[in-house]
Amino acid sequence: MLGKVRIPNRRGRPRCRPVKLAGDKGYSYPRIRRWLRRHGIRAVIPRRKDQRPDDGRVKFDREAYRRRAVVEQCVGWLKENRAVGTRFDKLAVNYLATVKLAMIQRYLRMLAP
Image: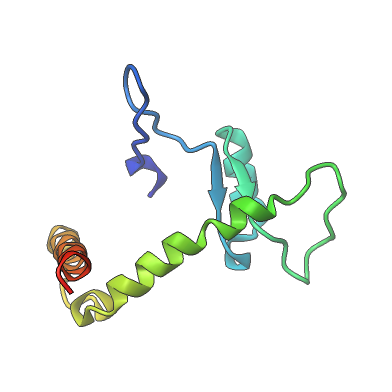
């Protein structure tokens, strides 16, 4: 999924990698953290209880983690659409079109309640 990220810059080509990546405890695996470190992406992922505690060298960025609520709300809005939540479409192209339609419906509902 990170291969599809395009972050626009003021000049030049868009960046393909974010500076930080926020995820919940379900993404707290050494393999994921190593991959992020190798690619220069800072992990904003809390550690699970069964993992070793943070050694204090790198502090957990709570503010960046709280901003991921925007993404969670967007996913919740998308799942209001039944076709997106259950993924009726088998082809990725059709599913992407369904997600785009759901977002258009959401924006229209916000503009004209």
